[in-house]
Image 1 (cartoon, rainbow, N blue to C red):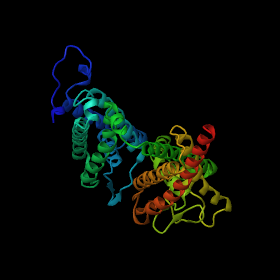
Image 2: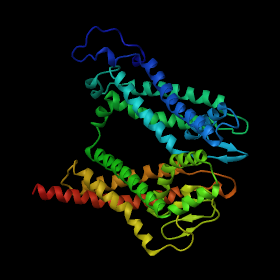
Image 3: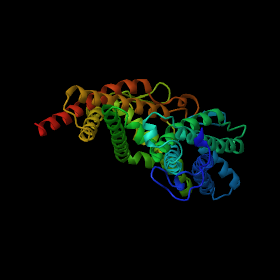
Image 4: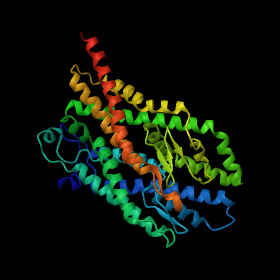
Amino acid sequence: MTSLLPAPRRTAAGPGRPDAAHRRPLVLLAALAGSGAAAATLVVCLAGGVIGWFLTDAGAHGAPRDGLRVGALGWLMAHGSGVHVEGTTISAVPLGLSLLAVVVVWRVGVRLGDSVSGHGPDADAIADGVRDWTVPSATGVFTLGYAAVAVVTHHLAATTGSAPSVARTLTWTVLLCAVVAGSAVAVGSGRAAIWTSFLPISLRAAAAAARRVLLWYAVASAAVLAVALVVDWDGAVNVMSQLHTSPGAATLLVGLCVLLTPNATLFTGSYLLGPGFAVGSHTLVTPTAVVLGPLPMFPLLAALPDNGPTPGWTAALLTVPPVVATVAVFRTLRRYPTSRWDDAALRGVGAGLLCAVGFAVLAALSGGAVGPGRMGDVGPFVFQVLLHGIATFGLGGLVGALAATALHRRRTA
């Protein structure tokens, strides 16, 4: 627990002794970093709420505090709180705001890790097995600072009608800080480099390939979503015209579509894997079958395929995931060469498995209730997505890894 204590004053840095800039008070810095990271995204949401209130009717109704409350509720929803609108539960998370929170937490966490990197034992002592509490301590205090802002925001913004869940907000906060902030502190402090050096090279290669596959697959899914919107652009324009919105309200609606684009991207990725997703109870959207019911007037839904039998060419979209996995694993494992076929197969299949699990977790976060009645069931079929992802990404990863190994053996023959 000595890493919780402020560092003694040092006049100069010597060999093996970090300078004072990297031994700043851990508790103070971590608490400020956590609360600051939460406040940064909260301020953005509050400003967006006020702008949205003004754009709706030029401020003719309500007061600026109503816009501030909406912005605060949006921030809480980005942390999984959910809200009630006229008695209807809205549990879907706007992942655009959640992604913004992840980016801010990561950047602040890396800077925090660099500032407290001088606490605890040095690299040689850590390599010898000495316990180091710097990263867990900094992450814990960071989480407390972030959670304090979340609790205060909930207390000020919650009403009897909206009723956001403080328990779900704190659960999301703990997970966000533990996964993102903890990793960022470990990277910024240099501990991650030390710890990963003890891992087998095969595991590091599989993890790097899985990260690359997941990133490229998200890009491919976003591209397919963009193409679908462009193809049926007239449908989106027709929805906007039927809503008879003012220019300000239309701008607000477009901004909401942007915030939900990550959700739609994950829906598209689930569609490309085969299981697809539901847009209401008893509905199905897959490359081979589309069953839809009445849909709300929302421009982003114009990307949905037409109800009924699908064209034969849509089945070819099922090749996108394995092709992406093959190319990504091949390019990644060229930096981790191996001449053993069994080792290459382990890396490729491991990368596919890790990517499938990661995408299934993200798909589970993308859905939820978005309205009353049948719209309470919207989102991917997570378990089927996981199973198809394991098979699809695993096969693509295996092919890519074997191709990289064959190229390496040929060059070293």
